[in-house]
Structures are given as C-alpha cells and as structure tokens.
Image (cartoon, rainbow, N blue to C red; front, side):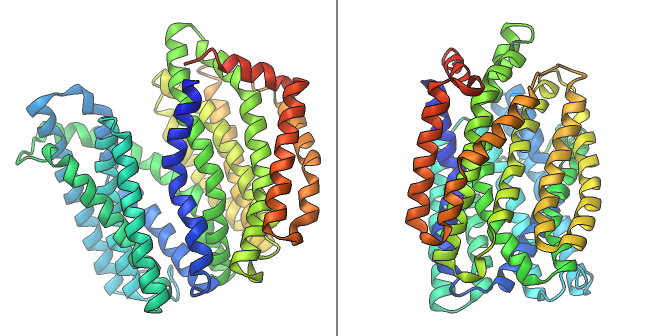
Length: 475
C-alpha cells in the first residue's frame, strides 16, 4: 500500500537522529554527568528559542513562493531571501555576542561559561541557514538527498563527538562541538546542491514581499518554542542543573514518539487536502475514519515505549536514570495531543484561515509560562512532565475550539478515552518486569503489542479494523 511505503520513508528520515541518540547517549553518559547534560539541555533550548525570531522566519517565504517563479526570477528570489537571512541572522548574532561579552545572559544561563554561550550563538546562525537550504531541497522533492545529507552529517557529528568526549575527555564541550560539526556539515552539503539558487542579485520587491509574509509567523514560532522548550528554564530556576540533564535525556527519548506522530502527519495531511478538494467535507470524513486506528496505534506504542525506554536507560546509562517511568509515560502521552492538534489545524490551513495559527500558539506560549511556574515550583521534576502534558493539552483544546469555526471533525472523545483505559490495563504486565532486564522488557512489550493488535483487529474493537480497512481506499 502506497500510504505504508510513504510512512516508512518519512519515518526513516524522522527517526534517524533519535536512533543515533539511542546509540550515543548511553556511551556519552559514562563521560558526561547529569549536571553537564543539564548545561547541554539549557543551551540547546536557548538556541531553539532564539532561532524563532533571529532568522525572521524568512525560510517560510521560500516554501510559500518557490513555485511562483521560474528560471532567473526564481534564482533572484531565492538569492534575495538567502541574503536577507544572512544579514538578519548575522545582525542578531552580533548583538547576542556583544551582550554575552557584557555578562547580560549570566543570570539566565547561570553557571554556564561565556565560551559555551558563544558556541550557542554560532549554533543559532548555522541552524537558521540550514533551515533555509532544507526548504529549498524539500521544494525540489529531493527526499533521498535529504536522507543522505542527514546520514553524512550525523556520521561526522558522532565521529567528532566520540573522539572529543571519549579520547580527549572534553565532556559536554565535546558534545556541543559535535553539534557545530553536525550543522556545519548540513549547511555545506546543502550549499553544494543549492548553489545554483545563489546568484549576485538582490531584489527589493522580493525582499518586501518576504518580510510581509514572514513577519507575522515570528509570533507563531515564538509561541510554539515557548510552550515546547520553556520547561527547561523553569527546571533550572526551581530545581538543579542535574534535573535539567535528566529532563534533557528523557526528552530526547520521548521525541521518538514525536517523530512517529509527525511522520504519520506527513502522510495524512496531503490525503486530507486531496479529499477536501475532491468532496465537500471529504477531508473531515477521512480523519474520522483514520482516527480509531491512529489513536490505537499511538496509544499502544506509547505505553510499551515508556517501559522499554526506562529499562534501556537503567541498563545502559546507570541507576541515576531509575524511577523515570512515570515522567517518560506522561511526556510521551503529551504527543497524543500533538497529533490531535495537527488534525484540528488541517482545515484551518486548507481553508487559508492562517491568522488563527499565531493566535493559538501565542496564547499557548503565554499560558505555558503560568503552567510551568505552578507545576515545576510545586511538584518538582514530575511537575515538569505534567506541565508538558498540560501545555500540549491546552494547545489541542485551543486548536479544537478554533477549528470548529472552520470545519467540524467528530473525534468521539468518549470512545478514545475508553480505548486509552483498556490499552493501559491490557499492557500492565510489562510494568511488573521492569527490573528483569532490557531484553525481557522488550520481548514482553512486543508480545503485548502483537496480542493487543490481534484481539482488537479480530473483534473490531473500537472500530479499529473498520478504520484500518477504510484507509486502504486512500492513496
């Protein structure tokens, strides 16, 4: 089935970085303490937040207008956007470097040296350039090239990381330098294949158009990164850097669920758009048919993944990563709402109601500050996980409220809640063998998943078989 083939292709690209984490984190944990992982987590969160406005979101203009031009006009447009990105990001990064030299960020990044902060500024610059070039490759539909680029960059990054951390004892500095190598390789590799889009041309009309399109999206991006990454700073403020490190590691593992949810989303969204064009409310009908099998699959995966991830951490990373099961489970469950949010936003994008998008993300971002403050300050590390879950829930509820004004999708929440309870109860056995070793936990989880799929499909519980069979009709 074409849908399954596409899903596998997107999953390979999406899961590759997280597969690398599975290999390298246990290796690095022997040389990098939880507190030093905290420095890395704090630094990388700052980098991601800063990129939301530093590049002025000009990369989004590449996606929007790329197919509006051809030949020399296209080259002039892309060159203008690239020069804008270079100028804007260089200006902001120069300001960041100056402020660092004046000790401006010392209170925010307490305990982190200026040398590390300068590396963070360079990572911001590289990340923004990488995004622009990546959009060009995506628009050219060079999926295999993107995969090769990722493999090459990941390979170089791991090699440098292993050499610097294991042989030169550079600890977290080696990790950060390997991140610089990763983004540098991505940019240079992309530049090699996108250089024909870079000519000696700057068109002020294109620049004006790019600014007008991109500027409103800054608020959308800022809201998004606030609710996704602000938790790290609250943990650092109310707890310790070692707790930030634990959160960083857990987040790296749970983002595997995020990658899978996003891969499915990459398949479902084009089908929604195609179905909506072919038939009035056809997209909503597709979602309603797909929802039972999607929800069952993701729920089943989350419960068993939490057990496997906890066992893996204890066996390969040390006892200090014990007792994280609840945190892993809560943070993984948050990505259920990420998927449901994508379902709600599909009609908003299809019917071009894009002014709703920054409103939803900005409100979520502001509320996330309150939620994180309350839960992290009152309940500590577990409270941080609950805050992540709560913020994703809020984001979904806001998107659901707004999407109903555009198109109504029947989610059948009662059935979804009952399905969640049944899956949790059915998969309880794996929780009783967590101390039996990683292999036992993994085999138990696989057996549980196979049994659950067989029973649910055979008896068509929650209409999962009916949902799966109906997806075969879509291409």
